Image (tube, rainbow, N blue to C red; front, side, top):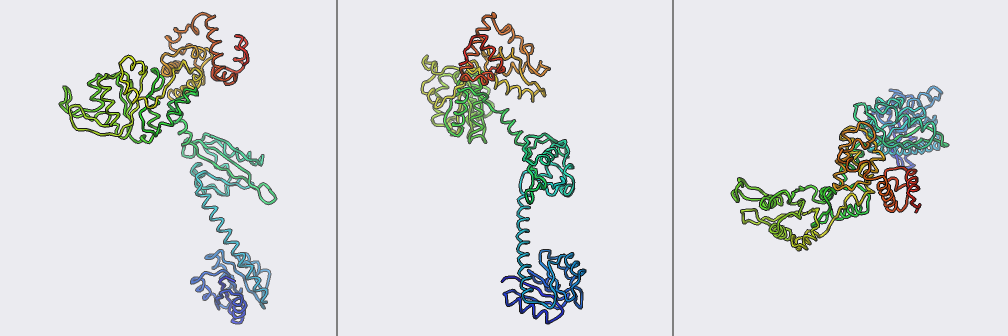
Length: 563
């Protein structure tokens, strides 16, 4: 048997008997004849069990028991008494004794008491270990945890919960849970009350509240009942997750998502962007003006391994040949009239990052040749300097022209065309992706509501019809500008025709053309959207921005079959 036992008794025969019986069982026994000697032994060693006499010449066992309890709360103590009484037994147990035995001592009684006491100590240590482990886990969890008893008083709360609720731990333990309610206006307490009423689990997402310091936050709650013996309800536990940062990040990502829409061509573009983000090849982005080519470049750079370096942009159509050469490759002071100081150029600025060449179809044949050589070697010389500069740049070019057609006319070098077009990302015009208009409108509504601090929820059916009939020569940029104009003028919750730009309305005159022509256009639009939605009426209605009942009514009006 293992265990260190201290025997405290002023009778030598008792100490001898205890030592003999216990040592024979393998226990390590230490004896003390007085209160002072026992205190000295306790200061020098740790013991697993203490036997002590209730009555001693110098100091009582009760006094020693109090001393032990102050220092060693987990050490079991068994009192020894030759004059048992209810008062003595009660006082011993009240002061923390595990048990007491009566003189004369029976060997079996002694050994059984030692075995029970040491087993009790082992269980208490295991319980304490579990408690400490639980406390460590409880404290380290980043989510806030609050436990309440059957009277809805707080019995446990971790640090994360005190931060979320902005309340001191000592100020809430043992107090009613309603004291947690501050800026949340009692929503967490309502959740706990529902657990008490239903004895069922509860999950609530995105509660807006302000803590005691006034900080706005968004919290999700999960609550569950606590069950005791025989599954009797004994309280509840509530987990609070501060999702403010996550919601803010989701909002930022949604706002900054450069490619909005679910059209097949847009999904293909998104997939290519994802595949190309970390592939250091040249990319050619094509599409009409206003389709979002620059946003594709931003996304390619932001999601790639070069995101920590610069994204340098230049509009090739905005500069003359000589200025473009200087801007791209740099120049030294005095190399031409007006070159008063050195210029390192965009290629050098973009070293390690990405260089975006917008309107690449506008550069001259001489610049095409020089650019081709740079793309193949990533080496160049500044204007007026013979020193070769080597860089590591990922080049992305964009154009709204048909470069292949320009190659056929001899206006664009074929070798440069294929060098740029290692991979092409094509953005279709908005008139070819009318099914994305509802997604784009929803996106711009959210963006401009935040920008202008408004609460505009939708656009009218007449506006939806006009949007679907419009050819959108300015593409997504035109749609964005149209909605922004409407936001400035709209003071209600819905954008109507009167809020649209006058030029836009004039172009359509109530949805453009004669009534018969309008009907034909609307019928054709509905057929096209139904076909895109694979004749799913709910999905088609969503694409058109109308209700399911309205699309059925219009199908009947225009004689469109159900499938």
